[in-house]
Image 1 (cartoon, rainbow, N blue to C red):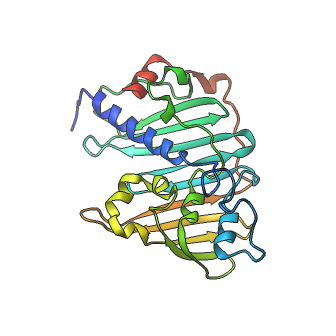
Image 2 (cartoon, rainbow, N blue to C red):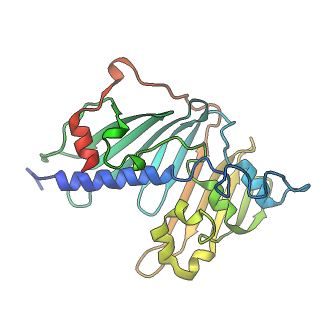
Amino acid sequence: MTNGTGRTGTIRRTVSTLVGVIAATTLLAGCGPDGSGTAADGGRPSPTPTPKEKLLAAVPDGTEGAFRFTGKDSSSDISGVVDPGAKGLDLTAAYKDPEHGFTTRMSFLVMQERLWLKVKFTGTEGLTGLPKLPNRWMELDRTKLTDGESAPTYEGADVGNAGPIIEAATSVEAKDGQTYTGVVDLTKGEAGKAVGEEEVGALGAAAGQVPFTAVVGADGNLATLTLAIPAAGKAKAWTYLVKYADYGSAPKLAVPTGSAAQKAPKVAYDMLNG
C-alpha cells in the first residue's frame, strides 16, 4: 500500500484510542483501596495482618521515590516513570494501525498541573496525510482541549490501579514471603473500572472469579500484579499486567526546558480534539 491519502480519520481514531488508554491508566490512581484515600478498614491494620492486608500495604503510596511502570491490558501496552515527589508522570503508549500498518507512539508528561505531549509516527513509508509535529515536548493548554477531563493528570502513585483490584480480592493466599495468589471479583468496588468496564461486562458470571498472582519485591514493594482474564464469548483470554520496578532509583522527572520543549501548535490540538 503506497501513496495513501486522507489519514485524518485514522489518526483521530488512533489518538482517541491512545488518550483513552493513558486516561484509563490514571483513572483511579491516588485513592485507597476503597477509593477514599484511606484503607478500607479506616486505616487501622489488624494486630496480625492478613495476606490481603500485607499485599495492599505493598502497593505504592508515594513514599517510595520515583519508579518505573509497565501496564498491559486486552489491547494495549503502556510504560513510563512515576515521580510522586514531583507529582509527575511520564507515560507512553503505542498503537499500530491494523489497516495502514504505521505505528503511533504517544507520550504524555505531567508535572503537577502542567501537561506536555510528544508524538512519533513510524512505519510511514509511502504514506501521506499524517500531521507534521515537532520532535519535542509540546506543552498543552488544557482549556483548549475539547475533552480536557480525559487528558492525563497526576492522581497518585498507583497508576496501575493495583490497590482497587487487590481490594476486590475474595481470597488471597501467601505462597511465600513474596508471592501471593488468589481470586478477584471484578464486579466489586472500583475493580471493574480499573480493568475496563466493557471487558468486565463481557465476562458475565466469570468476572467474579478471576485468578491473580502478585509478587512483592525484597524491598517490600509491589513488583507485579497479573490477572488471568478468561475467554468469554468471541473474546479470547488475555492478561492484565501491572509492573512496578526501580523504586527510588528511576530517574526523577523535570519540566522540559530550552530546545526540548515548545508550546503546542494548532495541529496538535486539531489532532487531539478530532
